[in-house]
Figure 1 (cartoon, helix red, strand yellow):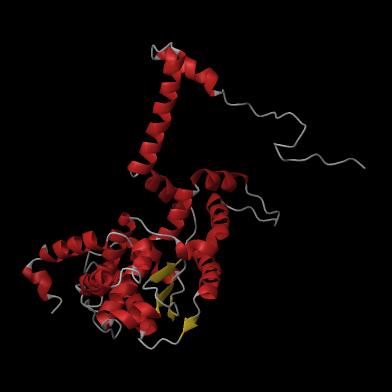
Figure 2 (cartoon, rainbow, N blue to C red):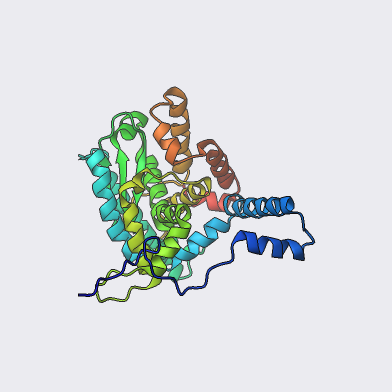
Length: 331
């Protein structure tokens, strides 16, 4: 019986038929020659400049966001639901779900209806200030709940529409219904913008691309590139709840919360409670004040939701820019 050779490129004795990329020792002198650089030490300096420039482009410009967004655009939204199911099992092993005494599920359902209502009004060209993230709201399986996490003031947004708020946050901040709506709207913004998945892709950009291109699970079904990326993301399901968000993510989530609360004031097909968009600012003010009183308890919030003070300033400016007619709409 013929022995099957290893396909591992590090252990296989077979020579590769793929062309090898030229080593730095070859292409650097060529590039240096074109640039008029002939000294070997200068070649090493050139390599350092190239590497530094690439890293600067990746970390200091929106390039990484654009690349991750492009890859994520190929991933079907329906795959988020399965990713969320896997993530919540890991989160609730650590923080078990408890009774919802604050009406979190009901308020969350109101916001889902508001998002549907905003889309309905957009289709009738009644309002044009809501962004297109609401278009996909029905593709998610929204599930709002409370988890037991002593001394952890935080909330979690998992792919597919699963949102959890810690009982410590609700017990210590004494939130109004409007502020709970602001909190849930913010977390819904993370879900709708798919921030967790984007963070994973940015952190594992090269491996994500490579695994998607060579992916093969022998199930007889030819996965698309996006579906292969989604199956790669499932490997990260266990720690998605621990991922922090960037300041850019936070501003986007705040904007989504503002729009969701504003949508409860639209003419609608549903009987909705109204939640004032200024509740987003009030929520962040409470978090900021509480952080000053108990920095340990709010460390979890700041670690995953940075820039609270700067975001507060942005929301104050957003309200001040509304004209009197727009402000009267929320009376």
